[in-house]
Amino acid sequence: MFDWLFGRAGRKAPAPLSVGVRRVSARYDAAASGDENRRHWANADALSPASANTLAVRKVLRERSRYEIANNSYAKGIVLTLANDCIGTGPRLQMLTDDAEANKAIESAFESWTASIFLAEKLRTVRMSKAQDGESFGILTTNPILPTPVKLDLRLVECDQVTDPTNTKGADGIVFDAYGNPDTYTVRREHPGTSGASMDADKIPAASVLHYFRADRPGQARGIPEITAALGLFAQLRRYTLAVIGAAEVAADMAMVIQSDASAETGADEVEALSTIDLEKRMATVLPEGWKLNQTKAEQPTTGHDEFVKGKLNEVARCLNVPFNVAYGNSSGYNYASGRLDHQVYFKSIRVEQSVIEGVILDRLFAAWLAEAILVPNLIPDSMKAEGVVAVHQWFWDGNEHVDPSKEADAQGTRLGNNTTNLAIEFAKVGRDWEAEIRQRAKELALCNELGVPTSTAPLGGESEPEEEENSDEEENKTAKGIARVRVPVNGRA
Image 1 (cartoon, rainbow, N blue to C red):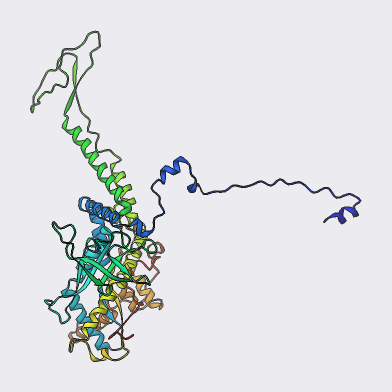
Image 2: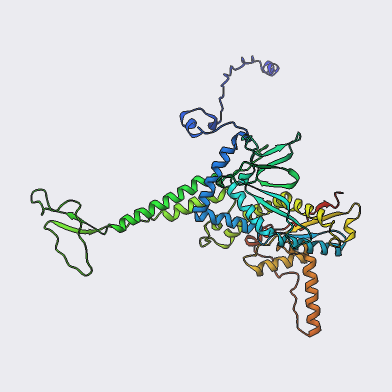
């Protein structure tokens, strides 16, 4: 196309260059079919969620998980910590309707009922079962001996009982409708691990069953233990610890050895091989000629044992979103900023788990309780029984105490002073109802003024902003959703 240019210059355009085409071959290393890769991924498969989590597979994982947690103090401690940090003393209901008196009445009645059925204790058990067994089931039943007007109760059943002996494939014990929703659950009347347990089972409607598990794959209907990925690591940790202890015991049990320095020519006095000498306190003895006595060096436990334990626990805790110092139960190697940074992921994981519990268990439990409560005379105000009334509510959980309360208070005052937060959010962080706290504080101040007791109030704004590395993430202590609201229809009407 540049012929005209070369023509004006009196020269002929050169012939086009011949460029060779180089074929590029690209691939994924992980998809290569070499012997090493083939051996490494020998157990990889293309099974569906139902085929991968059959009854036999879930049974083996549950049994090994329960054994490890029962015999490994680290595993037991991690599971207990997860349950305690996630559930705490239990969730608290806050009604958000426009009727303040109705809100107070419902909150009081519901709190009495949750205390009577030990809801907080059951929720901690449910959370432990999810980590240990992979899932937990609760059945809404009637308990006539409850001391509250509402006789609704939550009966927990172990996942082993939710099974259909005639169907051991796929979502064992669960029947789905045409739209993929659970329709009925088959629950055995006796635990299959009971000696001589009968095969009798009940078909329970899905509306009466609370199924709490984590679906790691689309279409997964049954859960597997959350510590599945760490089961082999727990086993390695126990085996290594036992090996170190065994080596230390062997070294300690063999007090001394007799060694000969005599040459082959001169020889030494005859001593029977593997002979032993009983030693007494403050005893002096003479060894045979050519022999000397050496004490065995107790070189166990090895200096790397502590690092091995820390490395394995760090790997174990990762699949549970637990920071190392929580799993280890020791923060001596942490500084303040590192501790806060690690706990941000942990607290966020807890908030996610609490949100799941609210949707799967608490909201359904409250709806069932409210449906029965409106039938009890004088328990629920008549205003809540009117047509179209919706029980808007939210849940509060225990808050997390700040490591440095004074700095957190300064930061809180600054946020309130520049209107970047409000009392509802700040009280929600510590799991408290802001209206109840303000009313209580007003009563206290009024009584102080009446009795002439001096009071002091802190300014809204602090003198300076907290250090960035210590207060950079305001999400850390948010353990209650102070803004999210849930609508529950009363009398089945939205």
